[in-house]
Length: 310
Length: 310
Image (cartoon, rainbow over all chains, first blue to last red; front, side, top):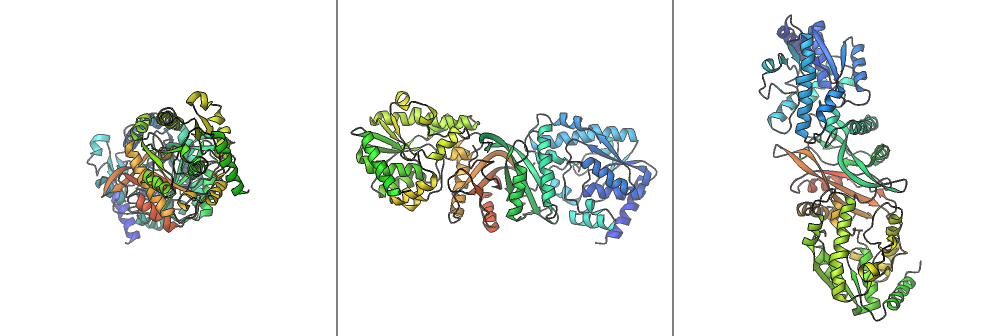
């Protein structure tokens, strides 16, 4: 694949489609939305407004870090605090589909709809990639970002048209295009992070307390596995609890699962055979998080498991 | 420690204590109760009645296998089917303490109380070991078999006195005494299995369906790890579910945790660094159990985790 040609074509396509209108896009900090942000600004410059919505489901220090990285590239990203709105929408929900739906609805129908209206944008740039479309069509997963593929007329429903410059690419191509376009390695090589963010890393109800726990666990895992070379690695907080001993007393504690996988395109994945020294060190640090007394390693390839838990 | 002397002393002590009365003991097939059964029959011969209660929580083929092994040693073990009684008592319970309590109550107050009454026994031989007592006193775990240590007057409450010949031993000594006494390796070297059996291997409510799932998983783990040399290894079924893909369709499946540990006395434990080939093979077999699509490996030493989950 000719990545330079792809970039030129997409920039031309975005320019031609948007014309003199205004466009908006939401940046999550993942490689897909980061690439769309850079492509969009190359094509549209100040006609494109880029927002980063803090939905309370972000990793440690993530909103600030993403805004800073783009500022260094000369791209202005607007940070929008919507934490309370998302936490309220998630309260009491345990079903994965309902949780994803609540996040999608809060984002598209409330927070983002408001931002689009304010901005006067009539085009939305979106980082949908081919794998998202394939898995949604196959019924494996409900992606948060494939409205058009699901037959939803965004223009009628939300007042804007969607442009998806990456919809023919798989993850490995996305990384190559990002590299070709000169994105910093921090973004181009960033491990995949799902749109519904840490909410997908909590099995069962999402609360501010559980988010704090899984956020701390995520920071530990990302720090310990940064040099692993793995495709993706993360921590999941379960609802189940197990007995443990702390200060010689019985404790009914929380369980964190570590997942670390090898993949080229996220369609299939195998488990990374990490060194035991590393696994023991991660377990030791994870079980120092208040309330957590078990650390498990996921042994399941995809299929039969998915990469994520919900 | 002089194991031969220990055996002679205990046999003499049991003889002297029971005199001409009748005794009864419940055999679970674990090394503790197996050793007590052999010591008891050496001391009391036909004055001791040994029962094996099938509480529906046993491993695959276990009741029949245990009865057969003892028959080969010339010891008659009576198999009592109490499966429905235990399953009814466990229905709807999710709290670990309530589950243990329901099993203890069903056993001591109902099933075993009935058997003791029928038998006319006034002495109960019990396989309590030192670690059980220490952990119960420390409040780490409620053991099912330490009534006397908890200050319960068994004579007044249940009509019998308890004799605990192993209460000064830790697990490694129990194995040595069993070997010295000539117990078959299948019993002497048998990996520890808790009294409440597979109920402790299910986090959350215990049902006949879940027992079937964890029983199959247990058989796989025991077969695969029989030659591991580990102190203990088992499978746990969680209540949490996770997404997976089966035949290209999304599936919300069950999660099995594998635990395999090194220990000498069960007071502390470290995780066995199993070969990845073995872990992958176990994961592959476990995720072929209907409804199961995740297999996790527990990385947590004791402390901060306990060996068991509930």
